[in-house]
Image (cartoon, rainbow, N blue to C red; front, side, top):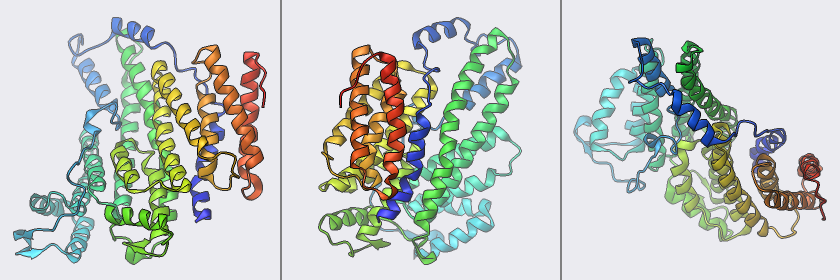
Amino acid sequence: MNEEIQRIRNYQEQQIINTIDLSMSDTENTEEKVKKKESKKLTPEKATSPLEVKLIEDTKLASELPIPDKNEYWVINVAGKNQKKKRKLLPFLKGKVLTEEDISHLRDGVDKAPGRAKAQLQELIKDNPDNADLMILFALCSYRNVLNSSNRKGALEGLKKASRDAAIALQTDGISLYNCEKFFDIYFEYVSRLKRFQVATYNKLGETVRQQDLREQLEVSIKMCDKLIDEKTRVSKVFNQVKGRFKSSSYNLPWEFTNIKLAGAKVEQNDFRHQCGPAEARQLVVYILAMLDVFARIPILTSLVDTLLQLIPEGSPDLYLRKASVQATRAFTIFDLMVREGDTDKVRAYGRQIYKTSNENLQQLSNQHVKQSFEADPYFNLSRVTIMTFGLYNAEEQNDMLRSALNAIKRLIKLDMSKSRVFAQTASKMEFKLSSLMAETGKAVTS
């Protein structure tokens, strides 16, 4: 289990190193930017030609990122749909109950003829509106039907809807290796196509003052979209690690919420070998925490992350810190998007929140030796957010943050008992950066 968690978290350690050189140059005064934009903003009413109208419409579509905080379309609420319901009798299948064999047959149909399968699935979903397997297959049909479409905007809209449908399926107690993999295929195809559409639209915009506002708007959206796309490598790596732990016969098995909750309870009771659905209790908890690390990096799955975190208890320090690590991953995903958006006020407020939470998590560790990545995370998170927000707070608050982060990272170096002291190596680089920033402020640090 320790080796599994270590592999899962290697990427985050690299991300921590990368943030050392992250600058806040994009976070200029938001109010001044807004005032400048409003005076020259190009709206459909101000457009003087059909070309300008089209550019405005395309810019609007290209700027609609799959981020719930930016677009209500991506706020997914499936309250009341989280429990598996008994499958109804289906007239479409001549009165038979929908079985796993029927689902398997439908999957074959989707692979061979997605257009025909979509019509069949549409009828089945009317009788089984909460069946996650049908929902993911319907989304997969939509995805495959538009892959080779020459209508760029139509394909983008189709992928947008398919991504949302697939996300709803996962949240409707629909986690399985098959369903997760199909969601990732659909979602990352959508954000990749969105990025291409953004660039194509951007290249059509001229240098005129009237169109400069659209260019600036798209520049921000492109930066934020890049962040979403960058997670694909991480997602593939972790998913393939988890998938490799299962036999092929388990690929379609559901990871029901009830089994995940049971697994957490059994782990707290030290009953690690108890079978909980697709795996033993301890294994299932490790696997779902690994998948949570991935889900937390995809903004439209934030509701799913909340649901799963509630299923896992936190009575033991290990489980508490593992859950805190997932929450930190999600927080930094949101934070990075804010940095790219360039809203200084939001970055400042959210950075303060991450700093406070990281300090609270450090209290759970006291001075115990650090052997696993989730134990090192609070130290790294405190330093990481301090570096990323340097220059955004008044001198007193900034110095307090630097002093606290530097003392914490020095403590991590002393407490690191991991193999080859991998955490101390990363921490030493962060210590150097924090010391440099402290020197800029002209303040001495006491350990």
